[in-house]
Amino acid sequence: EAGVVQSPRYKIIEKKQPVAFWCNPISGHNTLYWYLQNLGQGPELLIRYENEEAVDDSQLPKDRFSAERLKGVDSTLKIQPAELGDSAVYLCASSLRGNTEAFFGQGTRLTVV
Amino acid sequence: GESVGLHLPTLSVQEGDNSIINCAYSNSASDYFIWYKQESGKGPQFIIDIRSNMDKRQGQRVTVLLNKTVKHLSLQIAATQPGDSAVYFCAVNSGYSTLTFGKGTMLLVSP
Image: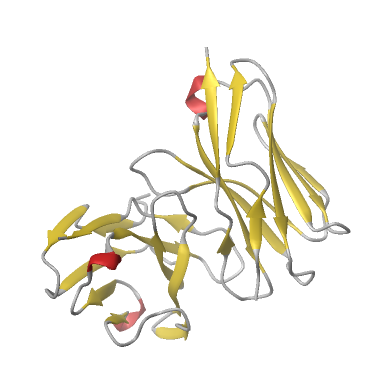
């Protein structure tokens, strides 16, 4: 069974440019998470979806970050415009439903220069 | 909100020793706990989980202990191997809310 797939693995952009990350969760998983991980820190939630509904986006900086999960499967996370402080690893995870084990993708390492 | 902390940022052990990694949480309503292993350049990998109706759960070479009285959980790795070297995170869930992660403990295993 394929795991959570994220692309791209690495992205380098100049500040003020837009960037988008894509996630394909494990088949059948209703819950999808986007996490941000800074160097030496644990993952921090950006947004959680139950099917196509964003049920927890309280930590998403909505002035520049947006996300969507059309049809309740794949998801994209966008930053526009990117800032230097957005440099981090963006992790996508999925689980059958909330309150069960979440499986992570390999992440996208973003560098903003 | 939930606050999750780990007691020790780095743990160095010899191959073959048993390792114990600790985690504390703040929300007494937390009811689901997961330990993850993260190797360099990879996403966190599920190791073992435990629910609040249990105080111990065992897997292959790993054991998780949960003490709800003091809001503490630990991960024990038996006969630690060099391949166990990684950063270990505990993650805590309250009800159907989101998993909250601790900062992580780096386990270094020397041969």
